[in-house]
Image 1 (cartoon, rainbow, N blue to C red):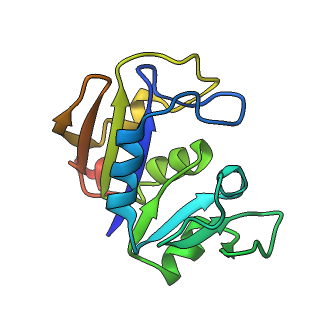
Image 2 (cartoon, rainbow, N blue to C red):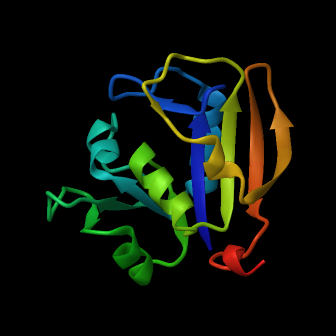
Length: 161
C-alpha cells in the first residue's frame, strides 16, 4: 500500500527556512510507530536535513536528480521508479514530493497530523491536495488532530465520473 505521512500547520504549512518550525513530540512518536521497519520515501533535501541519517529502523529511499548515492540510503531519480521496486511504503516529505504524489494520485492513504495554529511556514501544500480523500479523526490532542485520509475516488477515474 502506498501511504503518505505528514504534519501540517493550520495553513497547510510544512516548512520554514528549510526546516520544521515546530516541535511536537507526539507526532514524532506517531511517525516512528507507523513507519517502524518500513520503507520511507523522501526527497534529497529532506534526507540531508535529518538530524540523524539514515533514519533508524527504516529502509531509507531518497529521490534525487543530482545525487546517485547517499550514505545509508537507496537513491532513485523518480518516485515512479522507486515505487516499481518498493510498492509498499511511506512518503514522508518534503513538500515537492508530497505535492507530486498527491497530484499524480500515487497514494491511497494519508496519515495527517494537523496542528491547530499557524507557524508562518514559507512552504505550504494546497487545500486541493486533500480533496480526493475521505477524512477520519483518529485522535485529538491539545495542539493537533491526528487524521486518516482514505482515497474516496479511485486513482485515475475522476474524469469518467
